[in-house]
Image (cartoon, rainbow, N blue to C red):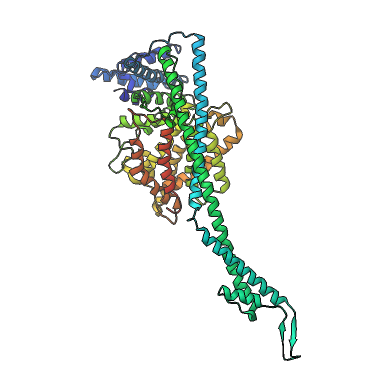
Length: 609
């Protein structure tokens, strides 16, 4: 019932005159119009929306419509009316959230306040925490060092060859000495002077080859002294081979020594790690004992315990209230929208769009998507995903992973469009890293409301494209009109201008939201990057919507459609299946699940896929 109330936009009930049959809504409006300072308090949202029926009520409503239409001609009345409607709408949404929160804390009562603790106990507790922090740091460094040693061992094992017998190496060395000696004899013979024999009949070299021939005979080798250059080249080839064999044998022995040393070091580090684990367990045990005795509040050592877990303790997992998470997320999103410098109508459009995004994951006749049968489950699981990823963005390690993933997605898409320059790609990548990065005070650039909205928009964009490509019947009415213009025949080309109006209407809302981000408005250089981002993705959007599905003429749309199909029919369901209310994912686990989901999407966009 609460979800049904959440979907109702009270502002819309006022603007379309539906409030005229609802007594409490009329009363609230009259009070605000008489005195704008009137405080609006809604105790029961259902009673507030109570609608009367009957002929008499209908007649009164007709008269009320006529009267309201006349009042709208007064110069100041429309603004007063819209302002009052917006205030009542906010009060209504606040009432729903407050009611849900009270119900949650009624079933989950707040524990009694902690008793006062002496300074000495607090100091001892702090000392234990500091001791734990030091152990944690040492442990992480030790694990990293062990990983490096392990990598070195793998590298050495990969390079290692079968060790050779020393006798074989000695044989190669003896053969090398013999062949080098024969080459030396041959060079000496070739460079020696010639002497005439029998005056003029023939000449011969003065160098004596007796020793060389003796060596050749002893080792059963051949050497043609009539063709010395060719023979020397042949022998030098053998010498190079023998030298390499001997060098390999020496390196193999050295690798064996290094590998043995690495294994010995690794075993020593292993013992050091075991000792460290024991110390960690002892410190954690002392911390928990002090907490149980004095209710001091446990330190945040869950991260390291995941690496060095206590031997006999199972990890305690707290369940979450999905309805409460949904309302928390929607409250932050609506608060962010209300803070924008835009018209009432635009804010109402934005709120309705966000609610629609939350519902998009329901499976259809043609698409599995999140695999949800009900809108309520889609809303609640999406809210858990958004809230957990938002927390992950506040943690440097997870933030870096998510930023790189977002940059990879945009780079994969832009690389498929030859019209986009390398400079534009670099600008967009730098812009994405900045937007999702941290400010100088260590806080994320995006506040909580904007983080929620952007995460929701990224997921909803993938689902919307899934509907557009594979299940047009599930599209919003405006996109159904655009879908009819997809392709390239003459009539469709003539009608594309009409579709462009619908498309630009959607784009204007997104553009306005981007340029309204506070930290972008303050920095002209970043505003320029934001405009470059919009200028690049506006043509991409047109190509996705209006180009034909053809690998040659429209590679961007063809590849994107193929990647979206895998996401919509297989990967998205797997992702949502791991999102649990009973055993919720940590920010790091949600980040890894997200990396797997969209990592596959990026791979499927690769040119060789």
